[in-house]
Image (cartoon, rainbow, N blue to C red; front, side):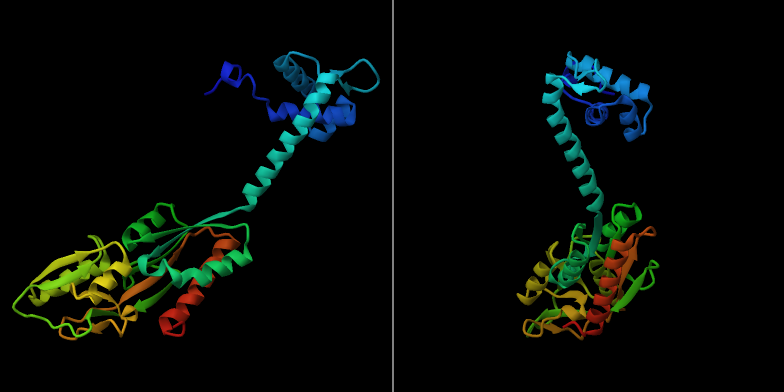
Length: 293
């Protein structure tokens, strides 16, 4: 613990002592200052004494009917008022500026959720949003450990109970006009290890006895989609992401069961978090039904 009397702290003024000094200077009375600060008169007197001892001179002239600032006290008074006003402003601002931590799967981190975040910002202008994106499993782990307040992730159907969920049909996609060479291992484009789609691809192909090799890996959804469009390999992805001008669906590969888009919310939720969750749920209802396209 830092020693208040250490040389490093000699120039620091305790706001509690400054508050007592301002109260006495404003009221001219230790009794009235005690009432204004909800302290006893002796406590206010002790605080003034400590402040004067720290500074090395008297701040109040106590000889007359009223306690009035000495010349040194007058000089300190404006500083004290400014310090206390700034502390009050900082406390008020930080209390108003709530932080919400949102985690979203990679394919929802860009333009997809921007209308929702704009609506939340308009409703709560002092709210600070912190958005994390990436693979669903680490995001869900962060949510379970209390590092995130709300997550929109992919999971296997009914894997975890959620506030809301939507089926996410998957399809194999390749470049437009791509031909499968059955004499070679199937080239795959995917996310890094630990991704649901990557695990599902390997399991489906292994069960079907289809040899495969990973030819391209990217942390970015856009990187995966572009690699597929460039003919670097095939990938298993949400069907809604297929771009007809660049991709084609591969029907010859084993079909995959739908994944699930799931919205998980922290159990303790203030009005801001509830509003954000409702907006995301409404937006996903439209998006997953195709109405948002």
